[in-house]
Amino acid sequence: MDRLVFTSNATIKEQATARQVLVNDLANVSTLGFKSSYDVALQSVKVEGAGFDSRFQAQTISRDLIRMDPGPVMATGRPMDVAMAGNTVLTVQAPNGDLAFTRRGDLKVNIQGQLENGSGHLVLGEAGPITIPPGLMVSINPDGTIYARDPAQIGPAPDVLIDRFRLRDVTGVSLARRSDGLFKVSEKPDGTDIALTDRLPQVISQALEGSNVSAIEAMTRLIDHSRSFETQIRIIKEMKGLDESGASMMKAA
Image 1 (cartoon, one colour):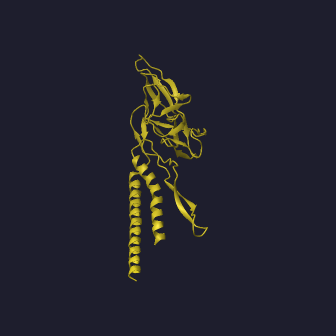
Image 2 (cartoon, helix red, strand yellow):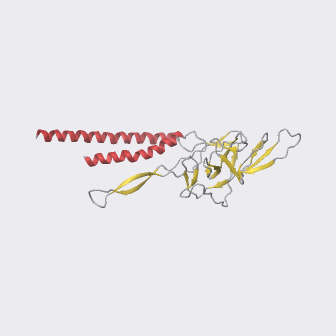
Image 3 (cartoon, rainbow, N blue to C red):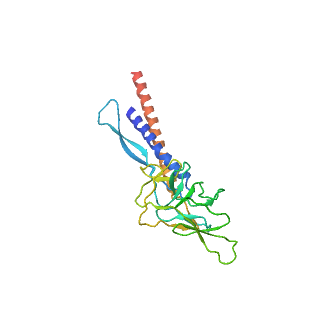
């Protein structure tokens, strides 16, 4: 009975890791550009102590590898909104100054005149942070080039090239989540760039990408975890009752 209680207790502990990732996904169902991640994996851990040397137990570990499945694309009509097409990611500057990546494309100009997304991360161009001159109307092409024109100018106003997004294609590249929620190259130091390939990264102008988390699927999995937890607690209570009954019989004898 002690072994059964130990097994149930270990099951509850290991499932907690999966629930943490699942709850995080549920909390980001409405977050623009959010990508779910591989929740847990199993690894074998050798059990130390009395018993056979060959005793191993399965242990769950969190693997925060990004799923690049596309989310729903929503047309907004706003000139500074962009959705990443295919496996494209947008290069931004992390709060600590590192180079990082994101799929969030609700862009705006901050008080310093620099382009940032809705999370406040500076968007990087070919030469660093992108600065937008005040009072200009901005348009973004599918290849990530940014043009602007002066709406106050009389007559045909030529578009002026401002900069180009530092877009990267991550086909075949494994991405992990940083502590600040941005993406990085898995198993590489923070700030590692992604090499350019023959694939041309593209964006969808005047649109935004939603989260790729399915609320229905996540809730179903959460209910399954809840029922599993209740089952393990019930087993522990049953074993406690059997143990007390056995102790009572021993006293009566």
